[in-house]
Length: 414
Image (cartoon, rainbow, N blue to C red; front, side, top):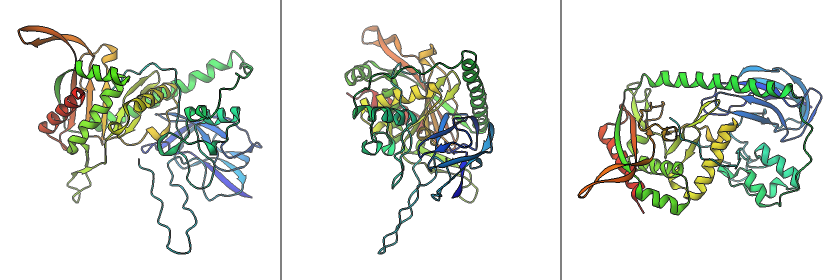
C-alpha cells in the first residue's frame, strides 16, 4: 500500500496559497474516488477537494490554516496511481503509447462590476479527466446523480471541455421525490460555521485586489469615453431573449477581436528585457461581479463566438456560483480584457483601472432614456456612457477609439 499525499490544489493560474477551512472526513475513514475530503478557501473561491484515489485517510497534517500550493495537507494509504491529490490544473496523465509511433506529449489545458442577473439556477463546473478514471462533475451534480441513480459515465457534459453539470444530470433523469429533510444542525453551531469563512474570504479578496491595483498603478494608462445609443441593441436583445450583461459581453469581445493590438499584453522580459507587446490569444473577458464577500471576476473564453441564449444561461449560472463563493476554477483563468458595470448601482459614468496583464477594461454606466439631438429638435433615446481604459504601452488613442467604434457597431447590428 502506498502513502498518497493530498496536496493543496492550485485553483487558478495566479493562486500561490489557500486556506484549509474544514475537513469533511476524519482519520480512519475509507475514501472512495470522488469523495469530498475537505474544503479549501482562497481569495477567489471556496472549493470542495475531491479524492482522485481510493484508500484510508491516515493523517491530516493541516487541520486548518494557510498552506502553499502543492504542499501536503493530509495523506491517504491506498493504491498509488502516480498522481497526488488535488492539483486541479495539473496536466492529465498520458495514455500508454502504442508500439508503433511514440505518443505525443499531452498539452496543458488552455487557460469593475456587472450587476448580476436574477436567477434561481445554480451550476458549478469541474474539469473532466480524459482516459480512464472517474468522470469529474461538480459536487452538486455528483450528489444529484447518486440520488437519482444516474451513472455519470453515461452523461454527456455540456460544460467547458466536457465537464458534467447539474443541468446535464437533470436532462437524463426525472426529478426524484424530495428526500426527507436532514436533521438540522445545532442552532448555536450554524451561525459560527457560516460567518467565519465569509469574513476571512472577504479579507483575502480585499488583499488580492490591493495587490493587483498596486501593480496597476505602475501601468501608464488612459481612458476614452463615448455615449452609446442602445435602442437598436435593445430590440435585438429582446428578440434574442437575453440580458444586457450577455449583449454587452459579446459586443466587447467582438470589438477586441476587431482590434487585435488590444488583445496583446505587455511583456517586460521580451526583446532581451527591453519589453514588447506580445499576443495573448483570442478574447478572454473577465466579468466583474460584486458579491458580499468581495469582487470576483470569472473569465469567459471567446464569448462573442457563443450562441447568445447559451451564453446567457451560462452567465447566470456563473454569477450565481460567484455569489455562493463556489466559483469553479475553470473560470479563474488569465483574461486579456475586463468588463465592469456599475450602472445597476445608479452610477452613470466611472473610470476603471487596467488589471495587469490585461491591456484594456471597459467601464459601463447606467442604461436609461436620456435627451438626444434629433432632426428638428430634441428626443429621448436609451443610452449608456462607456469608458475604455487602455494600457498605453500596448495601444494608443486610435486603438481605443477603434475598439469603442467596433463595440457600438456590434450593438447596432440587427
